[in-house]
Image 1 (cartoon, rainbow, N blue to C red):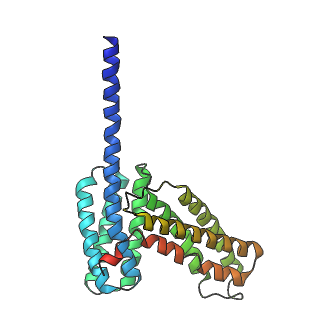
Image 2: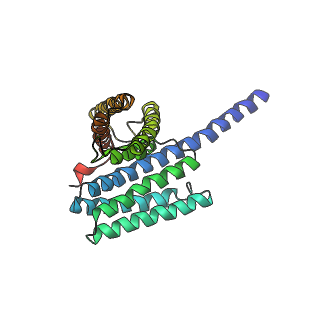
Image 3: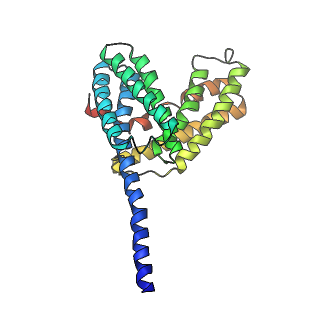
Length: 250
């Protein structure tokens, strides 16, 4: 009788622990589907492609509606989560309105960029480890470095600017190392062998670009700092584009 009870207890424990895993898998799958549409819209607006941006925003809004319907309750367990859902909804609505009205695509892009930052906060509060969040964490200090050095020369790059580059490089480097260590589920993001090889190649190239910038910073060579700072963005953008569906909606 005791053995029978223990066996039943074991089965119950397996079932109770398996259910949350299945739910988490579905949640991640739907987050990846939303991000494929969202990143496509983000890239299309950044490239100034109006017709493509309109298509991408329509698809993004459809994915967002489906995501909310399926997972709003899962991700609105706190007051902060509920507030952030409202913010995301407003950001997406504003971006769609601007794009549909033939407004500034750059303005729409800036608004869209905030969506991933808010989503990151929601996932952090809900203890969801999500690969694209590692890219989001890296993007902000990386972009700050690029913008600080952009258009500068050895005379106009001030000591204060240099200190900001060093500060953001430290953040970017740590976030990049975390991305390299992060678990990547190729199936979740529909990456075939070719696409996975591209992902790894872009990561390798970005690592080399960061190493070049670090050497320039260590040497204090302003000309090289400006040059290598510009080089840390292209490979990252190429990596991000792998998670889009841009080619299919042109």
